[in-house]
Length: 467
Image (cartoon, rainbow, N blue to C red; front, top):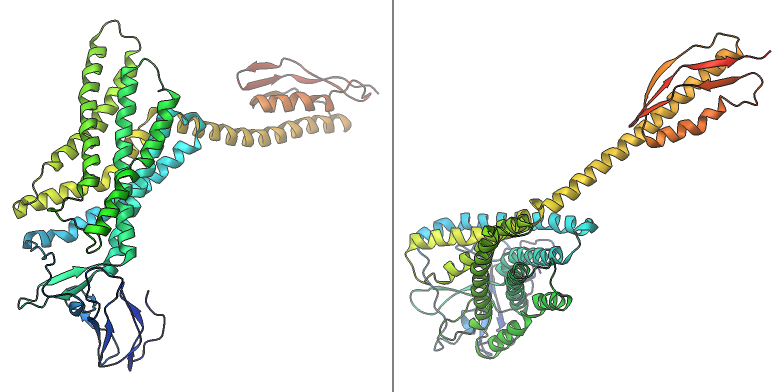
């Protein structure tokens, strides 16, 4: 949290670098503080430093283009830290564009999913087991989009680059604050939850195809809802405990391959992907059998389901299985292709789901068409009611005035475009001008013909004028 104080050329403003709070420091001096005791693997008697330049601004690292805290004095030179990996030049060239693809994809997914959830919740006719599962999957993708965007923007202030004490002065990054670890804990939980709901979609589809019913049992349905949000905590919490005790390094954004604690999370996720792929193969087998059977009842039901399954399961099953087998080390050009492909699928998944299960869903489109039609009818009815009321009132008032003035009443052949409500209004107001108790006026309406919403009034004639 940066200080809001006004800049003074004689001092550098108070600043929080993500780990430590630095007080206002005199320009052209070096601020030194003891290393924070709450950070793992730091020397308790070491010192961290931060340089205040002569112009009253904190030193900005030329590579990272942000203010920099020197934490080299907080690390034991005899202790082995994870050495930074060398990023190939071709990968560095594409990282900016990959990040743009990543941000744009998750932003589009977030907006489209919010619209999809709003539509699903608004129309009551869409409230059913299948769509409730869709909504929960949408929400998991919404959380995934949000946490991915937050993770990247939040972690940057937590990263502090230092120079190691060796001659090559390799740059190492350390992000140790509790807030950073909490963000990554939520990231892994939401990521796991997202995979669980994809898995539940597979379970529901598989059960639906294997059964003759349109809904699963109430017990299984409730179990799936609890499983989707609760199951990830059964392996994310143990992973957090293991990281705190045995691998409490950096921001928990990296994983030691040798220790393998990441498999506490990766194992269940991989299992759901494999099972979903098995579901896919079995569903395709059953659908093929039912669609080719001559005695199959309601084949359109299975054709629609086959279309959804052919798109959904490969999208979330085959894709992940393919990338699970991708080796950690590969040629730089292949790594760039892999990064583009993975970021594209990961970031635009939510958008694809919103299109498939909401915007292209025939039930949803039917409800939207119905809503639009009802809106147009209400608007046209309102306009017609006002126009018809004025026209009828003016017509009868004109006839009444002619009679009072002794003029010859006119025969009229008038065509009105009326809806049902307007016709009722006409019938109720007609007696005002044809009341038999009026000695001066007895007007009769002859030849009323109703055809749909068209009402033809033919020969509205004055019958008698009594003196």
